[in-house]
Amino acid sequence: MIRKILLLKEEGCIWTYLIENGDIVEIHPSPLLESKDPQIMLGNIYIGKVQNIAANIGAAFVDIGGVNCYYDVSQAAHAIFTNKAGKKPLCIGDELLVQISREAVKTKAPTVSSNISLTGRYAVLTSGNTRIGVSSKLTKALRESYKEKLQDWKSEDYGIIVRTNAKEVPLDTVLHEITQLKEHFYQLKKTASSRTCYSCLYAAAKPYLLDLKNVYAEGLSEILVEDHALYEEILGYSQREQPEFAEKLQLYENPSFSLSKLYSTETVLEHALREHVWLKHGGYLIIQPTEALTVIDVNSGKCVSKKQKADGFLQMNLEAAKEIAKQIRLRNLSGIIIVDFINMERPEETQKLLAEFRKALSMDPIQTTLVDVTGLQLVEITRKKLRKPLHEYWKNRGNGHE
Image (tube, rainbow, N blue to C red; front, side, top):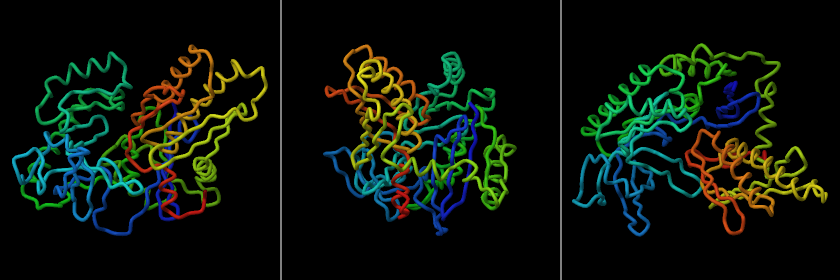
């Protein structure tokens, strides 16, 4: 796998494009904010105050300073409180450490968690789960090796998750980072005890900088940046946080032929905002996000000959499954996704389709799960919500590109 990253500054926004084997597979826009005040961004950590508890839905609303956020009350048992207003696990008026775990989407408030996660390049330290975990994308032998070697790091205060990028570095490098994360965690707790409510204890890096931390290092050949000021910012960040990336960073300077033209980013973006996606052999997808879920319909299109109605439908569904996995990642679709494949008569064909679909979805770095097939032969998928989907960013910008 050969990977590249493009960073472009266009129309008040930083666009990050991840390229794998020549194809753009992820698009992440990061609007530039003029205010110098701390912004409500994914990963920020605050001292919040419980304003309301909705016991019937197992939720509470926590104020982090003018913004009420959704909070799952089941997390209260492991929360880090700075001020307790009552004896119950969670009470109105309680003050506790919370972290933005999901951005606001449409009418939904941001989600906060008291399971504090500190993410490094090779590992994650989390206060809400005290187990030792290892990325499922590592080999079985490497997973078992890490679990064995990290037993001495077990703690009642935090858990550790080893990330996929750890497979490329020595154990000592991973342990050094875990030590830094551990020190950061205890410093946060110490600082919180002396800070006032609504204080922002930790401001996460800008989204386009976090995109660099989250990309797989394996096969990364270059990071191309078109804007000079942006290049200097990313160079400074890389030298501090990811020195191995600094040497791959390049300033692209060719005013007569921009990065967007060189890699056809505008065309890719335009296609990623369309409802229709054509498949190579004549079929097509219709992708329709709604408030509650995303619906994807597979259509036979131009392939209507009788000869193709048997094996042809399986082949078309297999082609559609690969393209759907690609589009989910490209468009950053999340939550519940329902796929209506072309109906097939033989159960063994359905099982083959599901196996190939699971394999394609497993390539996504964000947790994506094929849940089941309903009685109506609809395939249910869930994908973890982190940032807004691409179409939502575009709509908010008020641009008429669609």
